[in-house]
Length: 455
Ligand code: 5AD
Ligand code: SF4
Image (cartoon, rainbow, N blue to C red; front, side, top):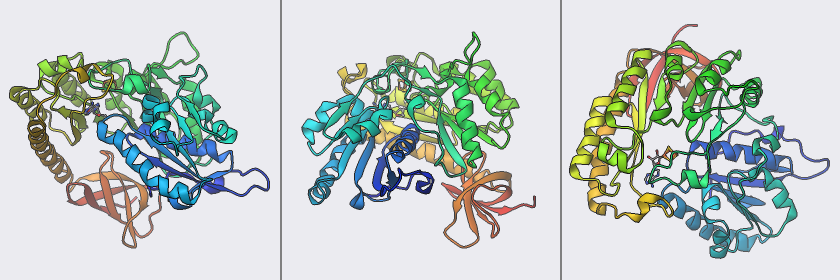
């Protein structure tokens, strides 16, 4: 079992005097918030002498940070645990932990199904992980504790790399009929603004130039800020914009109903806010939007996109879609295709509906599998053609690129454009973390090639 290494500098972790490092392997499934949580868990375990390793084979502890959003994501945990059995037989001292949303949803059940698991820890309790490991023996903690986990986690001293995630809000009160998030991540909670500004400054001090604010419902952010009034996401972004050296800001994931006027305006007047917005709509049919409990119509969504594009004409819109929701007719699906044609997305994720235990929609019968498959294929073909066109449109344009890694060939750097497109630049003198100007010379479906422009 291997996984891309987490951006995290083991050398920066201080080990207790005279203690040999123990090796921790983390596999992260699912969304960007899980990536962020994995980093924070690695930092927390660092204080107990654990350093990250890139394969499970030589690990003293394996931690699986799981996703519960669709059935397939959930089932992956059990196939991975099955494979870990052989490893644990060879090394009975190895600890196995399950974190994340499957841990929250299934708790004790995971240990019943897979007794090799030592620790089950939910997404709100992982600051307790080091103590659980130290205590030894099997442990399950799926509390929603009163204390703030972020206040009990070490500072971000080991962070390395030019881009970082920063969780500003967690949980969701929207209760879309298909979604487990309100149950696994709990009610909406926003982190206080000063603490976020402090964490952002810590990251910038470590060389971070781009921060993506994370939340299941990030634009619903309403964090305490000392005064009587809480801050909105727009207010928080504007304050982050004042941190010198923080060149780029992004946020994800948003709900259409929480795009307020100031946040829309920020897309026009806050230079650090990148022209990219992930705004899931899920369906283009009013009937299905209602059945999904999305609480807006397709027309309201169109009007919102018009206002966002008025504020920032070159913004690249992306979205999530679900096909085969219970009751979805051919006409409903046509409405989704029509919405996609009208909005014209730069990229999007689309999924076949997956019934999740405990959600209201799970009570209803979905559409036949073959029908859902055909719809998914048609939708993905349309979205792919829009993505390819959006990429092709960049050819000839001057863009900025933040280098994240070296390329496959000598003298080549790879980074992201303002529109979050992957860009390959010929730049023999380039270094990770450089922010450069470049002109796009060629485009493929998933990346751009560009030449460096002076200064
Ligand atoms: N089935 C399929 N897709 C789902 N999503 C959330 N729940 C489900 C489900 N039960 C999708 C939505 C959401 C994205 C993160 O995952 O499109 O925006
Ligand atoms: Fe799930 Fe997003 Fe709906 Fe919240 S707004 S219930 S996270 S799909």
